[in-house]
Length: 127
Image (cartoon, rainbow, N blue to C red):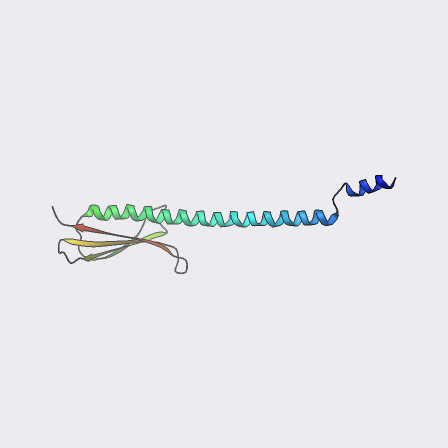
């Protein structure tokens, strides 16, 4: 009979083994949740940057379509649904009189949490 009782005692897990397994499982789950949270944050950041790039490209196309413009700075906001985004257009002369440098910066956010993206191109008055 002592063999039967030894087999029954060795057949299951002890409480310590179960608790260690649960601890390892909970650490793994918490690690995966933290990674998922970081993934969501990075996804939002990438989406924000891509939107800045797209808005800058659209606005720069409008500026280039206007042609040769006088030097100066202009600012403005985008229309809905992008009314939270603003742009700054800086036109400056270049060493070549028939060429202007155009720098466009698109900005989103408040002072502490701003995101911005800038593009530079050149326009000329060659017919």
